[in-house]
Image (cartoon, rainbow, N blue to C red; front, top):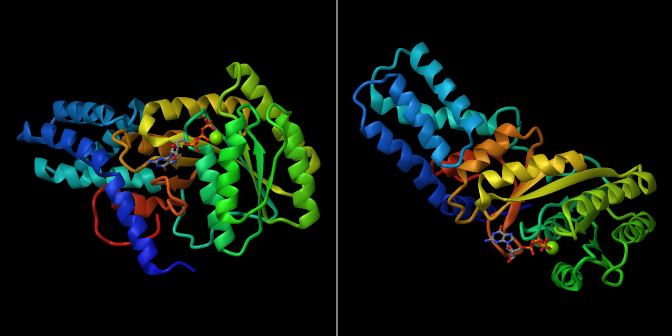
Length: 320
Ligand SMILES: Nc1nc2c(ncn2[C@@H]2O[C@H](COP(=O)(O)OP(=O)(O)OP(=O)(O)O)[C@@H](O)[C@H]2O)c(=O)[nH]1
Ligand SMILES: [Mg+2]
């Protein structure tokens, strides 16, 4: 459905977006490698620190270095200059590990589907919903949006603008009303119309964290009770530019909601993009979509192989 040039330009956006991250990772690694003439334990210790400095997280950095060490031992590598390629290889294997990827079909395991979009304030939930609505509409699916962030009046308005821009309907109620009631209305409407994808916005901030988590649980229960035949995806939005904070947020939200996937936003210009590697490695749920800008077309399905190619500045095109 997409033209090759669209894919290539999106790939280019990812590559450009990962520029700072790449310089951060490769720069740190180059600094270490240039200080060594032979491969020893100290080199590996410093390499591990370089990855941690690039926000790759302690667990993931240590895992990557173990993989590199094994390769070096197995292949009897003695040349320091070979380490960089091996490192890129092993980071790639962590990024692509366990995820098949490369599937051209747009993500939605079963229709009708409900996407519940959650995450802390400002990460890009509402914007991602606009982009998702457009993406599904372009593939011929019917989409309905639910404005269940009733905490701020402006939130409903902002989502309304996206709905209009995509030409999809939106269910809303007055600001301050019960978000679960909005969801109930939206489910009723989706069932009546036979909508393929219902996408629900939620608040990122309430009076306190406990309230927020309780509200998400309530919304979850309403969808499960009222629409058991729909495939429910709870997608957590994480801002890639916040580095390891994003990993902590995921752990926090996972306690309250059964997260089934991640939407990673703001990969354009994220200096702390090394965290993406640890998000993929440490979280048990897959990254489903990535955002690389504020425009309506700046969200795509995540393709781990293409992402790894973009990270290491390889030139081939491909869907990311
Ligand atoms: N550069 C860039 N900006 C983005 C991306 N996604 C979202 N944004 C911007 O991030 C800001 C916050 O986005 P929202 O979609 O309002 O975030 P939210 O999670 O809905 O925020 P709350 O409703 O306050 O919880 C906006 O200025 C968006 O344009 C992205 O992929 N790249
Ligand atoms: Mg919002």
